[in-house]
Structure formats: C-alpha cells, structure tokens
Amino acid sequence: MRTGSISRKTKETAIEVSVNLDGTGEYDIATGVGFLDHMVEQFSRHSLIDVTMKVDGDLHVDQHHTVEDSAIALGEAILQALGEKRGIARYGHAYSPMDETLARVALDISGRPYLVWKAGFSQPRLGEMDTELFEHWFHSIAQAAGITLHIELLYGQNNHHIVESLYKGFARAMRAAVEIDPRKGDAIPSTKGLLGKGTIEV
Image (cartoon, rainbow, N blue to C red; front, side):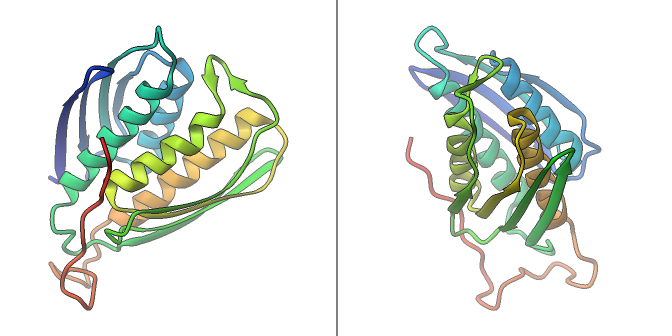
C-alpha cells in the first residue's frame, strides 16, 4: 500500500495528515473551516485516495494559515506516498460538469510544481470560507506535491458549483495520474530515469 503521513507544526497551525493512494475514498476531515472540510472530502471520495486530516489553526486571526498549511501537508503526504513514482500513469485530466458549470483540470506529477489558474468567483465567501483562498490552496498543494497543475473554469454561474467542480476535477485527474500502469512495471515514467520532488517555502 502506498501511504504517507505528515505531522506539521508551526506557530500558526498544528496538522496531522495521512493518505493511502490505493484506498477507496474514505475520509476523516476536520480543519475548523466547514467548507474546506467539504472540499477535501470531495477530493478524497472522487480520487479514491483515503485522507485523514486534523488541523488546529489560528482561526481567530483568519483562515489563511489553516487553508495554506492543510494543502501543504496534504501535498507532502501524497508526495511521500508516491515514493520514486515507479509505475504511475503520471498524467491525468478530467472534465467535471456540475449543473450549469463545467471545469477542466489537467496535471502532470512531474516534480516541477506549477499552477495555471483560470477561474474566478462572483462573491467573496462561500459559507465561512474566503473564495480568494481556493486558488491559494491549489497553488500550495501543487508546490508541495510537485505537480504541474492546470485548472480552468470553462463556464458556470453558481459559486458553490464552480468550486465543487474544480475539486472534483482535480480529484479525478489525480486518480488517473497516481494509478499504477501495469504496462510500465516498476519503471519511472520519465526518459530521465528520475522525477523530482516538490518545493515549498514554509
């Protein structure tokens, strides 16, 4: 089983995250931000990556540190679980429709972290979560896990639908990318013979 476990403690957050890439989409999420819990649950269920995440953050300040650090820890746990990335499909993409909304996500577990973000919202908050933090969450997980990640909202109006379609698309793309390709055996999917690791600033 490809598993990863991260314990991350700063003056701003204390986080415990564990993942199982070969899971069934089981989750136990408690970040202190209800809407973020809902989105990480969607990620787990639709990627089939089991995720346990417990966050104690400085929400009396604002949500920024909790959102950012939870994504960093999740990305680091995924990176740990991938190991040398032997046999993985590496690439994944998904179109994710939700009612009037359609999102497109494409990614490469390349070791070269990068985010292209083409999405926006018409309201500042969803539930208690600031909508500007969604882009930051995806940027942080891409950096920590070493993912080249392209996220694009093709169209949509309802802000809840937009965010949920982005997370579900990311989940489905990750599910495809981390899958073991039986034709590859234990080969690293690169002509270089090596896939790098993510980079993230604390």
